Length: 172
Image (cartoon, rainbow, N blue to C red):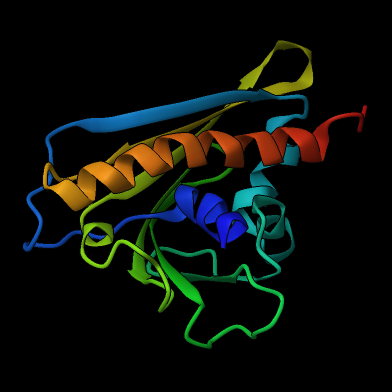
């Protein structure tokens, strides 16, 4: 479950009238990856690459309005009650993808708070064939559940970025 929640962190979001959203960026996680932007982009934009974020199963329909389906447990299949469906709001290859959650897994612990946030992942090329990965999480509410979820994902998003860094470590 922890692996699922960590990977789920980068794809968390949905707007909802039931939980008031905070204005502006709720939090940002960043990390430098030792790979070019063209190498890193497929991690967020392809089914095979998405598995780098920790999922055992992934299907990415890269288009505005497309759905990213992912499942982090080994014991199920895409489409079951533990599948995450993430809506692609916008993207600009190879620099940005914005998403929000459309459906959470049945066992997801934050039953209402997930409905407000969305995430914008940006990639910025750096010297030496490196890439800055930045995940801006927006729209978290101020209610108790939202605050608890935000605290969890502030740590979780950084761990997901670490998975991407590890994936490319030693590949040069």
